[in-house]
Amino acid sequence: MVTPQASADLPTPLARTRLYEQVAEQITAWIRQNGLQAGDRLPPERELAARLGVSRATLSQALVALEVVGVVVVRHGDGTVLTGRHSESRIVEAIRAHADRIPEIIDIRDALETKIAALAAQRRTEEDLAAIDASLDAMAAAIEHGERGVDADEQFHAAVTAAAHSDLLAQTMREISSLIRETRIESLSQPGRPRNSLSGHRAIAAAIRDGDAAAAAAAMHAHVEMVSDVALLRGDER
Amino acid sequence: MVTPQASADLPTPLARTRLYEQVAEQITAWIRQNGLQAGDRLPPERELAARLGVSRATLSQALVALEVVGVVVVRHGDGTVLTGRHSESRIVEAIRAHADRIPEIIDIRDALETKIAALAAQRRTEEDLAAIDASLDAMAAAIEHGERGVDADEQFHAAVTAAAHSDLLAQTMREISSLIRETRIESLSQPGRPRNSLSGHRAIAAAIRDGDAAAAAAAMHAHVEMVSDVALLRGDER
DNA sequence: ACTGGCCTATTGGCTAGGCCACTGATCCAT
DNA sequence: ATGGATCAGTGGCCTAGCCAATAGGCCAGT
Image 1: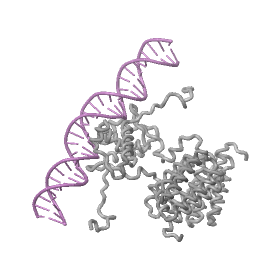
Image 2: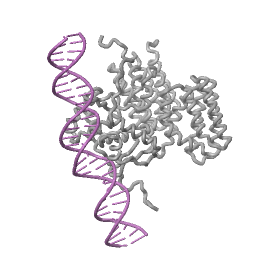
Image 3: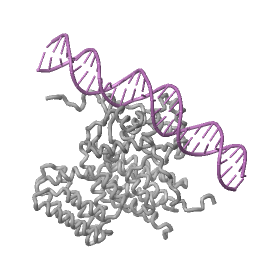
Image 4: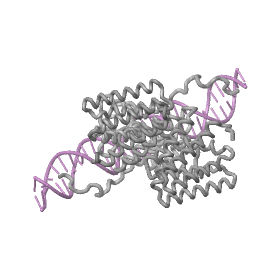
């Protein structure tokens, strides 16, 4: 045979990287480090190229790559400015145009997170439970301080997603996370909502801890529905 | 006021395009026209640049863009070769590496399609029902002819997805459709499976027609589970 | 025969330097 | 105020060239 040996572990494919790739990564790293926001400007190409020790042509390639990915937009005669959202997925692009997109977001949240909760109940490890508990504590503390607990809320859902141990579901959640975030902020700014949300989280967490998939799914479903009430009916009765 | 006029229809933002963008499009058009396949080679940069009437630097930018998007891979010293699938979504990329990815695909199918079935039961129009029926007929006909009915199977799920009237869910299904297709082909090649699949479809369709969301969800869930049995337990008992 | 080393043509990677075009701010004339 | 000219700064693109990797052929050794 031509290659009788196991090809899986042999040499090393030897990752060849192009210079422009390294440059692009350095730039994004620099953006992160300096906490640059949308609208901020990168240094001029000539200066940036000199500072990175590459030619302007190479830097230009890196900028093309970043532009294609959606990190920056290069404006002739003006400069290179950061775009807000780093390259949204096609899913998000497709939906963002709609003004009345919130119902759809809730639909897909319900679909994914209910399943995620059920899987989490079956597959969660001790580490997963610890992470979930930590997010509950964080949210409780945030509420004590009169905050809305947006971060802790996200933390909880991320922990549950991780506990489901499905890369595909997790990746899909990530894809729509920016959409979810918008509804979440809206929801948690309703008075009394953070506290209700926390008790919903506690119910979900308890079901996951018990390994009760059906209960976890039901609790998550109820939770998502509660959020949807708020998002849809602005001035609700309570 | 500064701009009292409606800004929506005024002049034209005047689409400025970079040269590399035009070049990239010309290249992809050329690929399409000549029906090039994965593995085929583009002409050498020097020649291609000359033929397109641009500098090598600009052509190089275009190739970077095409490389980032995933259309080609540029190999130092060798040439520029076409990649197979044009830029899969990140979701698909994330999962494709796994050999044991089928369970995850089933998880997310279950999550999405169950919800889709429930929504379809609530929102379906007469046109939606007609499309669903058409797919059922197509599958029945295919089975009569001894075929597996892969296309009709996809047609059915597409029709149900459309009936749910959620762009976001539909788009997400599209994203993972290539993954689902793989499991579907595997499933339908089991003897007797197409017929079972068809009766599952009929049950789903009936529930959707009745407007019974819970029944539709349950039927879809059962259907997805049946498929998963086949995919996971190769030589199953039946 | 088969292997391994070597050479070489071909091809992409990257740089340097330069000119042109666009943008925005400023200043001036109307 | 308005409109036009000017100018500095910035990206767009090009030419010319050398460097580096690859593939394929040739050849000696086994």
